[in-house]
Structure formats: structure tokens, C-alpha cells
Image (cartoon, rainbow, N blue to C red; front, top):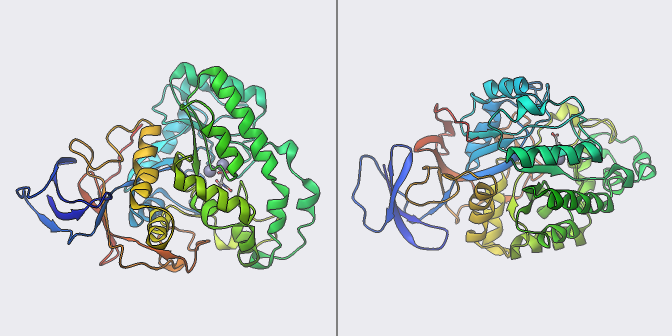
Length: 431
Ligand SMILES: NC(=O)N[C@@H](CC(=O)O)C(=O)O
Ligand SMILES: [Zn+2]
Ligand SMILES: [Zn+2]
């Protein structure tokens, strides 16, 4: 296959020749080999690597399955996902890992599976499996109630270092939550809930203190430590000031939404860590733009509308996002401060490098032919009803998005926007 006249993120127009599953050559005026696709100078990006998704199988297929989650990924230009361990059973033993891998074989995109830590985990059998990372390791309870104490965290970090595996940490310190603020939530349901109470409850200080401590533990142990979903500029700065082997990710929702949006979102805007003040949101986004943030990841955490239609305290935490990651950020390049090259690096090259996925994240000879084509001149409003996650809603309803025309995984067309159709190829484990 030859993709002719593709505009790369740096502005050059080039041909990309694919041989089997790999990119074989990138150049000008390349000879065709088989099928020719004219990109008409539209933007060709490397398939995105979303290092933080919750695809819910095994345990909660009513929220999402590997099939629906991976379709949502493909339709958003994401060609590799890394799944987190708070499923049922939690991915804390070799046997649980194997069970998740069987589910993941229904994925349309490539995938990695992480291992988790609880009091009853089994490091022996777990580290025997091809984990991409240990994590997310929960320092406070979130969906799945896998919060652990500081001693177990230190032990887990040391074991991960011995096994040569990075650690991804969900860093919040529950002793610094403001329980009285949570209890002031009142009894509104769904969009009518007083969701700002969630942000007042899970304080910025709780994240900052936990990140500070986790970085200390990671640095002392010589670990490759990755901080999940940092939501405060202070936490990003702690990571940026640490050695290079400490990295962090930021979600699109913490860049584009703040406490000011919670009036409209209600429980649909409840997630951990929570949305922050408009001031902190702006300072966080600034750090995404200037490079202090290592990578973007979505924390795609689907829950059904029925589950979200509850009081603030009863509704589950989490928002979907895998399909809107690249589209929202590309729309931001049209009139915002981000460049297309920065979006490419934050969504593809950086996560691939951080998690050691050597054939992912770049359009270069020898890399996997994971590609997505975009027309920057044709943004459209995000519509929850047209997205492909099983949950059927989005916190970004009405935001502008630049969605892909098509997506390939290792040379196979997995999504075609013209007909809104998906391929049948099978994703592979990248671990
Ligand atoms: N972010 C969330 O609010 N929820 C996540 C878990 C997590 O990442 O903490 C989920 O699995 O639902
Ligand atoms: Zn988390
Ligand atoms: Zn998560």
C-alpha cells in the first residue's frame, strides 16, 4: 500500500509506503506497491497510544467491552491502548492477567495490559506475565476500591524495579481529603447534582502531597515512575523537577474542563482526580503546551448514563475519552496555542517511548503502519450519540473535534469514517 501526498505533522508532504505490517519507506515520489491511497495533502499522524484506558472486561461489560472500547479508539485515531487493572477480578495475579488477556483478544487495536497491587496481589505470578507497567497503583480509593497504604506501595515499587517494569501511580492522599465538603453535596441527581462538592472534597493538596511522596519513593528505589492523570500544575512541576525517569500524563478533561463546567455536567463531571479551578486548569494546559508535561492520556473510564443518574455520592467516578483525545487536541491547534507537532508527540511518540513500545508512535521506516488521516479544515461538533463507546455520552458534547477519515493498525484498515465501518483485524499484545 502507498499513501501518496500525505502532509506530515511538520508540514512536509511525503509518500508513505507500507509493506505488510510495517512502514517500509517515507519519501517524495515513491513508487507504488499495490493499492494507492491519495491523501490529498491531508494530515497523516502516527496512530495515538493511549496509555490509560479502562475497558471494563472482565467484570463490567455493561459499561464497555474490548470490542466497543477498541472501536471507539480506532474511530478516534488511537491504535494502541494500555488497560488498567481495576477490573473484576482485579489484574493482581498471573491468572487474572491471563483472564484479561483472553478478553483483550477481541480488541481491534493493539493493546497492553497492566498489573495491579492490592493486599492480596501475587507478585510472583504477576511479574511472570508481559506487563507493560505495574499500575495504575491506587494510593487512594477510586473505582474498584483498590487503594493501598504507603508500605505496600514502597514494597510494590521495589519489586517492580527488580522486575524491570515501570510503575504508574494514581496519586491522591485520602488523609488530605475534605470530608465535610463532600458531605455538603446535597441530594440533586445527575446533571442537577452539586458536583463542585467533589472538587472541594478531593483537594488539590491531596494530589500534590501524594505526588511528592510517590516521586520520593520512586527516585529512592531507582524506579521508572509514571504519575497518572496529574490535574494540578504543582504536581506537574514536582515531576518536571525530578530525574527524567519520572514522567507524568495529563488528560484532555483536565486541560479543557474546570470546576466552572460542573454546573452543566453534574455527576457526569465526577472523576478522580476531580476537575480543578479555572486558574489551575489554565496553568496545567500551559504546561502541556510548553513541554513540562510528558504525555497525554485519557483515563477513558466509561460508566452508563443510568449509573451516572444518581446523587453525587452514589454516582461512580470517571468519564469516557479515548475517541475524543486526538480530535479535541487537533481542533485546539486551529486557534489555540498547541501545534500539530506537539499533539503528535504528546499522543504518540512520547507514550510509546515512555512505555518502551519500540515500533509504535512514529511515521518512519521500520515502524508499525499505525496511521490516521485527518482533514484539519473539517472540524465537527462532538456528539455523544455518534461516538462508539458503549456508554453513549461524553463530557465534551458540542466541543469542536477533528476526527480521522480512516485509521490503520499494522497496515490493516480498522476504521473508515465515510461508511462509519470497522475492520475485522485482531489487535496484538504489545507487552
Ligand atoms: N478516574 C476515575 O474517576 N475513574 C477510573 C479509575 C481511576 O483512574 O481512578 C475508573 O476506572 O472508573
Ligand atoms: Zn486513577
Ligand atoms: Zn484510571
